[in-house]
Length: 291
Ligand code: B12
Image 1 (spheres, protein in one colour):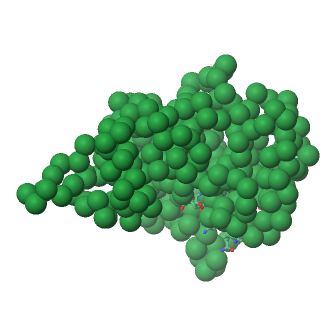
Image 2 (cartoon, protein in one colour):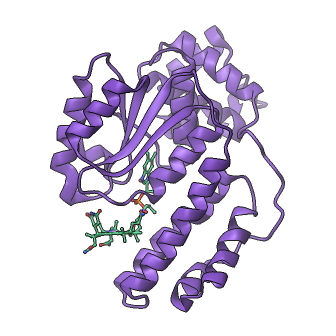
């Protein structure tokens, strides 16, 4: 259990504001300690984090509260199937990469994807494995070919999950892609998959999109929002140029950024690192009608 002071530190929301949200919108009902102090559990902390993120993204508190109330009534992911296989351990992916054996790689990826809902597998297995892959490549444990073999296999496996999510049409669309010069699309595709699995229409542009093409896509689609991945220092200037261009598009769309370098650019709403949380935040913002 967390005290109000701890919740304030963890969410970045002032204690007084937390009390207002509780009193006015009833977003959470903390229990009281024997001394009368508020105590919050993990689920309430998650609700308050979501509310804080929505308010930070510009959603009025009353709407954010309504949206968060819906969230608590909904399952976390569209199909929370039970795990049907044990998750491969930390070294198996790099070992499969080193083997250059398609069957070994397919086996590891198949077991990972069957080990829980995609959202959980993406945040708790795929992204950490990518970091491991990078370390193995940097240390010389894996050659460029072995690293590419594994990341390409992963890309195909995630794309299959993306395609398997039921297509939605008619709602607000979201453009998802990378700026010119950036080909690090794996985390972005995982994010896009989480978003599509929530029923959002995702227009996935992928890697290395020149600014002018992004603008054309934004103008020609019914997109209400654009999500740009920011993964490499070399492409920061072009990413800033892209964000500035997207903010001038008509009809206007809301511009979001995700990735390890998202704080190095200005003028866009930052998305959290956890992909499931990021997809939930954008989905809520769309559902709240703010975008
Ligand atoms: C796989 C990989 C590749 C693959 C990409 C395949 C693909 N289809 O995506 C390929 C082979 C194409 C590649 C190429 C290159 N790569 Co590379 N690559 C990687 C590696 C191993 C993983 C990248 C990745 O997916 N990371 C995603 C996650 C795991 O990490 P993250 O970026 O920190 O993101 C976190 C969050 O921010 C969030 N997140 C990420 N994106 C998004 C997006 C959204 C919307 C949200 C909400 C969240 C989110 O997820 C993570 C959560 O912890 C990294 C190593 C590493 N440690 O990341 C190097 C790395 C990113 N690559 C690097 C480099 C230098 C290159 C090359 C220049 C190498 C070369 N000499 O050719 C080229 C450049 C290609 C290009 N034009 O972009 C550097 C970048 C250095 C920098 N900071 O600028 C890294 C860090 C390796 C290193 N230590 O040097 N690469």
